[in-house]
Image (cartoon, rainbow, N blue to C red):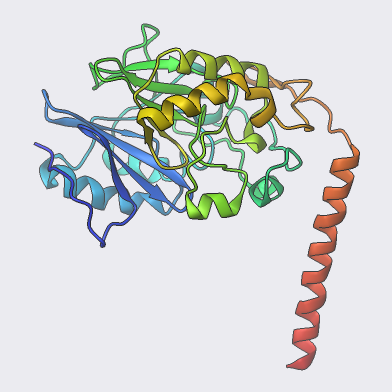
Length: 319
């Protein structure tokens, strides 16, 4: 049986979401562990970045003991780099199935990269840096299994998987109807992920999906509507601190009424024309547009790089 988690200074990034659900933040992304009390098994939700693998092992052994430290399965909300960074290492060690929506398969079997991120979608330095982020693919085809079409979650009979595309074509969220706990992945996040300051300080702000990696805003909005209609009492996201109670309800209502204003970029590659994707991967990417805002951003980035090079050269001359 899993331990009752008591937060310790040794593990300040661990947190309890709800009964039998625990999370961990690694740098800027969360992973979750869900316990199946009936079968004394657990399932890992997402795998974070490469540095998360060791931390997952430590947390699992603490919670479940050495005899049950291997999960029965890994379930992916989607395949972006910050959610699958430790996947290959862990699955090779554990030899367990990976479950994802079938529309994520091209990016997890080496067949297609995701659409390129949009560094000019606005919101902060994380967006400007996004052109550096990996966009795949990886290949775990020997372990990958499609999530059931009936909405069930293998290894977690109390849970449902809900297709919530927009941020990724096969993005899913997880919902436990008995107490309305929602793991939203990146369909809804609880921090302003575009801002490095907000990410580092974990400012609690309910937001739409991270702008820089969302290639279909119409689908993203529909997904948010479907999740809010579930009336969750607890929401744990791929980024940010879990929210619950009246703060969550009011924040969800506000997001629903103002999605286009607070979530969708004013300008950006995918605002007016989404990328087209199917079960074979990316089929169409809208052309990049140079707007006034983009031009100003390019100038700012160029000036920053130039200043950095200049300071480096000056420092070398001094030495």
